[in-house]
Image 1 (cartoon, rainbow, N blue to C red):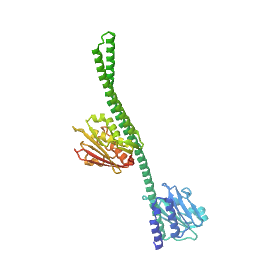
Image 2: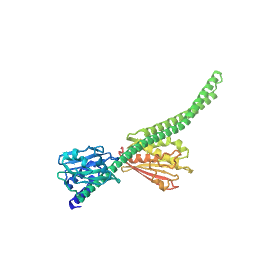
Image 3: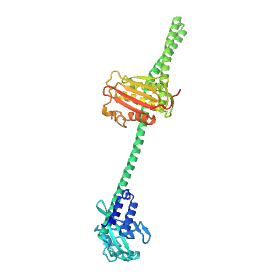
Length: 443
């Protein structure tokens, strides 16, 4: 192949237009290169139907007549010899297109009106099969197509095949991206639903726990109230029968004081439990940022989880400065420590005779520092890196969802803009360090 054709072919093969998947731009580049390299005025890219019943023009540019065609069909019914020749999947070199066996049927209706004398058609292949042709048409006197020119046109046809590969890859990549985006969106929606369900389940556990705790003081209060009523009836009956004595009256007063004391204490206890529950429920559901008392909030949370902790005899110790107030999200902090405490209860203390949880929260410069520790069984080293991944659980099928620590991680890193570090050894419990920026520290 001569240097000029090699140079043009080299430039086209390096062009990003061949591999960026935009076929029309690739077609234009190849056609303009054919115009230049072969010194012709008409060239086009055509695709052949799989049954060779017709060929369809994708782009044909005629610089002589100043026309462009993007939609033209040639049927085997009208040009059977030409379509039959294409089945051979070889180049058609028609030096005299009017007399060549493959192209002569175009003479009257196509070649003569357009002043076309010679045609050079080369196959476009994709995945080993011929899918189309590049059609080169010379206007003017007949010309003798050289071997170099046929090779040049054939090489450009191969680059069209490469462009089609790139287009197919780009389409597949886009479909895959669309599928992945849809899958990610579905996962986000389902995860959000599961997280919300997890939060509601946690609140449901709090309701069940507080109901159990409130039942005891309320039961005692009802018993005391009934006893007072009985004492009054006995005193009334003794008075009606004329048997009311000083000793009996003093006994009634003494018993009434004791029962009223019991009633008052237990009603206070029930009210206190309900107040703590209300605070915990508010902390769980309040998504707003505002100033709140850390120790008061966590004390209420611990009390609301008492029923769950009682199952394992867990003792929770809070090391938090009195009246430590921060400007943050109470719902986030409540959810974090609720999940951590329940995780310890459900996973750490199965064979522990003295289960204990320690929570320490303090302010250091412009940071909120929280330390959570338990003396449970610890976490295997290989699980520490996975424990905060969604759906990771060692109790699959036993009620574990694998979302607890994932929620903790997301709340700390996304909502509180903080960091979490987990340290643990088998048999030596767990130590979790949480560090978050202090937005505002009230005076």
